[in-house]
Length: 272
Image: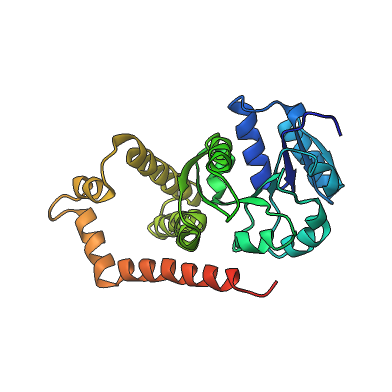
């Protein structure tokens, strides 16, 4: 591998691709300053085509970089740590996006005080509209956190939280896109049931959610205030919201997010 590589990715999947593309677009690093590893040749080719960054099947090559992003599935990470544990040193900043894996578990993979930043990003990073929460491991420095924030800020809004709150972030924003997609499904289904062509119902639902999201982002008004502005007394929106309240929709959604948080805690405390 060429010298001067500043950032490596273990795993060349969608999240690694999104982050790498964001970093390139922001001008933070050039392709020759990054590298990625993945055992899947097809995935490596897709990553190279999307980012212009070289790939390798050898994880050891990646750990010559100054900072390494662990972008593998949580069930795969223990085997990866067993392989690369001897390569983890205090000189390498490790940024993990493996859901549910505590920083302490990564730190335990080596006898050296490895610097770990844990991140919980979400899939809208793929379109440059992600959200990512970061926390420091026991050996990471403020400079390490600042560096990680710069990288994720290329494609996400970044928040720093204590590690115990990562579970809440996972439930809210990590899983959150699925909640929005589910709502889009249900809105489109209702539209089709009322006689709209299926493709029109889907397009109307999707565009409505996109527009609402942009209003939240660009008007800086609280969601509750925007909701009130759409809700005319005695109108159709009020009737729909009243039906939702009667059916306990709010309680069901809040309960679901708490359930996701509890599951995140279970996964985080699971044996290695």
